[in-house]
Length: 285
Image 1 (cartoon, rainbow, N blue to C red):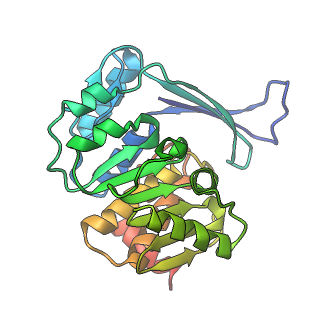
Image 2 (image 1 turned 90 degrees about the horizontal axis):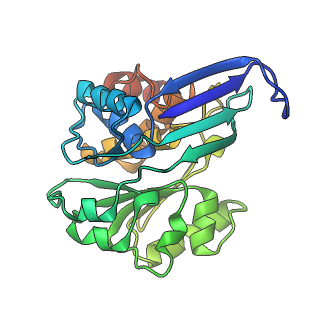
């Protein structure tokens, strides 16, 4: 569950700040799943829900959206993510209670090898869980990408990460387009089939063995940066699911992320394929 506090004025540390506080269902994997459901993509969510009120609310919301939670784990207390934003919507700091993470043993026991696309969040990654998964694995790693250090990346079709995490694993610091090229080459040689570095306001770096694209988005009014990365991943999956071109996929994913950044919740409630398609076309007009 995500609890978001945002002051009206620049944050004054050490004092109470007047502002707004909102609560919404969240979690990286759950956010990706909700975006996909709203984009009319069939999705199964493997996650851990608490037996408390927060867990009950989140499960009911998933079922209302048509997200299958039959493979999920229901136990303990729901993890809570408390985020303190700056007045402009950028993240100041956050505190996460990770007391209810899904375990590798639960995932290994699931029969999900036939999934067309399997998405793993790096925080729950353990090497042994890959054996029972499909050959098309997408890794979303806003944190914890260094857990892959020393491992082959050949099982990963797509890795979406941040500049900091890409630097941690590859050893190359992001200092411009030439350094992004070095990082992309490193990931391709390590076995990944596609790399996406989500650079926030600075755009996107997209790399495969055949394509290298640097996408710089227009400036948008950011109310909330939480959830944008998950929305972008959902857009990438949408493009892959419908076999779209790299250029279309990046544009669609960026439009979805921008839509999410313009609302106060972790996922925009106003998205659907046609709306995002029109936004993508308008941005490129």
